[in-house]
Image (tube, rainbow, N blue to C red; front, side, top):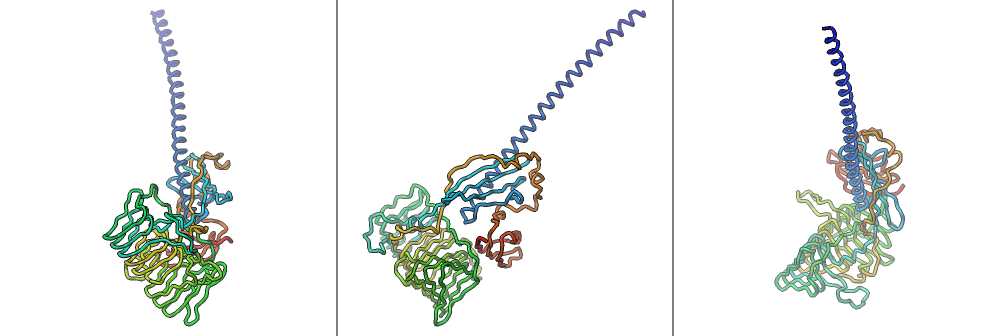
Length: 476
């Protein structure tokens, strides 16, 4: 019996050893599988973070590109105060490469993801006159109205030297005429009323027409100025900037060239007189907020050469400006004074009154001509250079090296990596702060009160702004 018991114990010990070895092997395999699975999970998380950081960096590129389009420098935030976007952040650095070439570098961070993208763009000047007569969304020509071309220098007018065009429909009212081409948008058409004529082609454009942006010079405002009785108030000088120009009834204001004038609001009342004197040189007038030429207002020109006056209006806000409860366009022209000028309002609808007459050119977001109005396109404008408008063209895009100080930090929280607090960071649209600028801004605060500020942009609290009426930047 003792021998049998001893043999049984020996066998049980061997089984226990084999079981322990098997358990150890299973544990080792499990540990390896766990490590493999953890490594795979980390790679998946890193890949996801990098993709999200890539998308955030692209959002930064788009924001910087948008900034260039509206006349800013393209800088958005900085590495010390980036823009918060979703659960990540980004900042964009713009570099002037010369020759109107600008390089944008956007760094996006999300989780452990770090990506930097580069976009090179060309801010190229575009001739407003090359647009012809244009209403970007649509054109409506009233009954009996006339649209034609001429050359103010007296040169012979070449065939197909100008055109009326739109990205939408062109409607020509009863008895109205277009002495030239009328080119609607790619998917649109020309609609003729009874007795209406178009002497040229009505074939649609193959591509939409792009309206160039207006680049407003950066200059601190000198406040408000008003017309005076008997002797006109005179504005002259190389460049001037004002918040408001007001010409009341029986008062007069004269702008003497050569000059560039920047104004937020321009109002000329009935029986008021605004005169452009281009005897000594051209006049460029920027209106950044709104313009109103009332019925009965007298708009005078010292010369009948349209090349002397350029009226450039980047304003876009449609709001109630006179307290009648009806939203008003930034451009309101009721005066029937004959004008000799370039009128360009890419963000506003322009409705011209019955009997209005313009020599020069006009382009707007929407263009409407009253009955019996007349537009005469001056082909001499095509020979000049217009550098007040430009388009932003993409040249190249690529992924570039991440900044070294960012690439070395693998902190899974980008906010902790940069030592910033997410809730205190600006949104992308509010992060277009350009160091080294003085700004003159009129804005509406959270209490719906219109407030003005003039001083260094770095000292301005954009968190106070509900909406911006006008802003002008000037290098310090």
